[in-house]
Amino acid sequence: MHDVPVDPALPALRDLLSPEGAPDLAAELAERCGARVHAEAARVSYVRYRPTRGCDVLWTFPAADGQPVWVAGKMAADAARFTASSSFQRSAEKVKEARGIESAPYVLLADRRLLLQIFPLDARLPGLALAADSRWSGEAVRQRLALSEDEWRLTEVVPLHYKPGRRCVLRYAVDRRGRPARYFGKVFRDDRGAPMVERLRAVRSQLLASHAHWDVAVPAAYVPEASMLVLEGLEACDELSPLVRKSVSDPKARETLRAYIVGAAEGLRAFQKLAVEGLESVGPRDVLSQYDAEFEGIRHVAPSLADAIRVQLQALDEAALRLPREDLVVGHGAFRYNQFLVREDTLIVLDLDALQMAGRGADAGEFLAYFDLVALRRPHLRPAVRECQQVFLGALMQHPHVDPRWLAWHRAASLVKWTHRTFLSLDTRWPELTERLLRLAEHALGDSPACTGVPESC
Image (cartoon, rainbow, N blue to C red):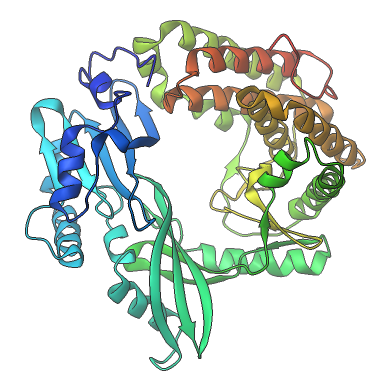
């Protein structure tokens, strides 16, 4: 990994993110826990950097059976305090029992401020060890669904998506009343999933009644001991992302994609009319203040980037003061094309964890900005991106309540967000990408609100 910042509070950061693969100790931990791996074959699959405070890294080791081995590294000045907690030690014992090992499933290197943990041990996700245990989770979910032992049998647990310290998605294959079925468990680091069963049921019933051709995964249960939301599996669905790639060279795929993008814009109007209780309100000041916690850290390790971000935040703040007050409506909070599955003529909306009351242009601005990011990261997709943006805007602007000035504002704010995230993920191209994203943010805020696409200069 290139261009790792020099962080005086984390002197071993560059060693942690070496391009040579995982540290030997990570491979040794995996082998000690019963996995046969090679350090040089590992790849960094996730980074979450907090300048001057810490860094989470996930190494993925390929495995012969097809299921990768995950080892997470947590670098922090107080890394030792995590191992001292009773919840961590309970999780460690659960992982030892599940793996059938005698040694600890973690390594603490106090002098390097580093904690290594093998999946599913996670100091910030104490419920993960339970959720990944087929015996415990199978029984816990069965009870939450109020099914008898004859009606439910868990046959397989497969971890799918994992962000250490943040969340994990697992797939449960079950035999339900003699028929195969799938469920998905989403493990959080807190109890945010508790109200989501009733909340998602309300969202789904209203969407279906609106005839917007939108749907969501059916919420099945919440398991508080594991901080896990359980959703029913979706059958006969495809991801929208591959269709974007295919549309570059396939006219039929392009027409299909256009129809789905129109559906995303038209369905958004119905989505914003939903009545959902208990949502947090997020106004322009809240959008801009989300960077405050880590801004000083960025200033210490990448001062030029911090100054450039500050300029854009100031421009956004001043622009928001000039605009009329924006209506708050139900917002997805992470509205992007890769948050959709498709099933015939229906769009299935994913990841509704961040439901909120937000400005009417917030989701649409995020949708356009994410396409901007994709075009920068994958230039070969730029023709498809431009067409998607034009189609989305064309359908969206038919709605009388859309204010193009606020749409431009939210698009620019989202581009600043992706600038921030690109740096904190220590993307190998972060110096180049952050500069170009900030230029796009300036362009989005200062140019025509109806402008689409990525300028060639960016």
